Amino acid sequence: MHPKLETVQESETGKPLTIRNGKNSVEKYFCAEDDILGRKLLLALALSTAAACAPSTLSRADDAPAYSASDIVRHFAAEPSFGASRSLCIGAAADCPGDAEKATRSESFDLEVTFELGSDRLTAPARKNLDEFAKALRDPALAVRHFHVDGHTDARGRDETNLRLSQRRAEAVRNYLVSAGIDGARLNAQGYGRTRPKARDPLDPANRRVETRAED
Image (cartoon, rainbow, N blue to C red; front, side, top):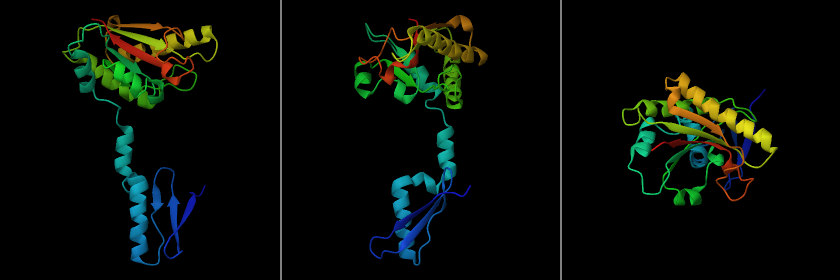
């Protein structure tokens, strides 16, 4: 299958500039009759998608976990505020509370861990993020701490189905951490379905998450 061709018209001369896009990168940067047009197109490409000029750098960024183990250690090892509950949201970026809610929950820490659609199967990015979480749990600062792994859903679907799915996802996170060498006795997995929403709107995607809380 041939890659898609996109043609951009140079505004001053009307001459066509052709860009050939591959699956994840620009394969042919420009076809122009003079160097001035070429420089203009390359500048436009840099402004719109700088990563296209450095696909290897983009690949490394995409492969990196969302957070490091040290980020998690700093969060959970910090002295708690009186009356505050420290928690870590394990879910897609859209599945965790937005900036407005984060401002009122300063002790929360969001770590992106996603599942395949409608299942408890962890995605590859999810496993990389949980690898960092496992490293953090082995750190001396957290090595004796116990954690709750709580599964939650939004209000879509049947309550019974959501409850089972939230339990399976919480257990999937726990099981992965155990397979990474974490003592299962330190992790308590529990599914709550739709009963403990984060957002006021019961259908808000922010309610779909697996949240990990440290026991104090």
